[in-house]
Length: 334
Image 1 (tube, rainbow, N blue to C red):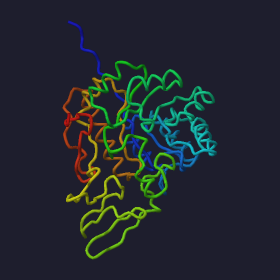
Image 2: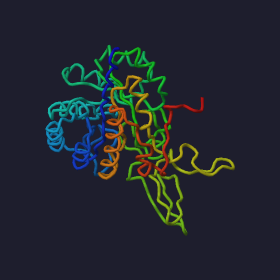
Image 3: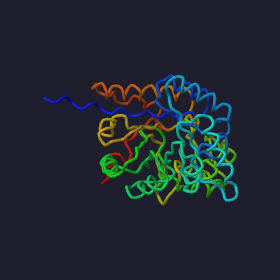
Image 4: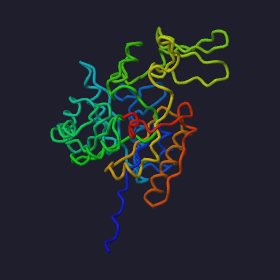
């Protein structure tokens, strides 16, 4: 009788918004870390986050000493007349020893392919490539080695895509969800004039205001009141998509409930679907969050590979609203 086929080991790709969180993710068992520069070239351009050039080089050396890869996210869309900043980011990532860059803009991908042919190129979820034809275009034209799939696909759809393409695929397994097509959000830019897909800031802190009104804490983004929280209740992060509004007779979360994606229990079918890498969202989160989530998913992946059952609800306490969902992976509404 033939021996059973060995299970493919998926890569666990983990977030790091600071050098301290970076070290924490490495020590918690990440196979790869993704991070970005401290400027508008990456889609988590918040004050107090990200890496300067020296910090990135030091962090990459630390990661490589521990057998961990580093993927640098340069995943915003360059402003007209300012492409030099994005070109420099790609060059600096390569000089620092990055294992790959994560890119979204077609022009920037083309630049990297020509000017940095030996630097591995991954396609960001911001590029919203979600079918075989689109993915083949990126692979055949620009040598993309991995595509991060948008969070709109079922497991069966991912398996069908993998059957038709030659590059690796990476999917999100934990963290925040987005109600918009990835890379196409205009809510924050409508309210603040700053685009999360260009300047890298969704709900920029400079435009967030909190004030007390009676017994409520009111959150405003620009000119818009987006939430009203009673005293003693934890205030959610002030994004328009998760705000509470009045629509006709309904009052509440019009766009999206505060909930986190948790696909830990779907690791077995995602492996069977041919997924190469599992990605955790949360570069803006704390070191404690990083340690807990990375350790939990390290154990989940290892348990699956060893034939052990995966424990349910490992990370519910870290989810938005203490609530989790499998998102589009199951598409139970169909």
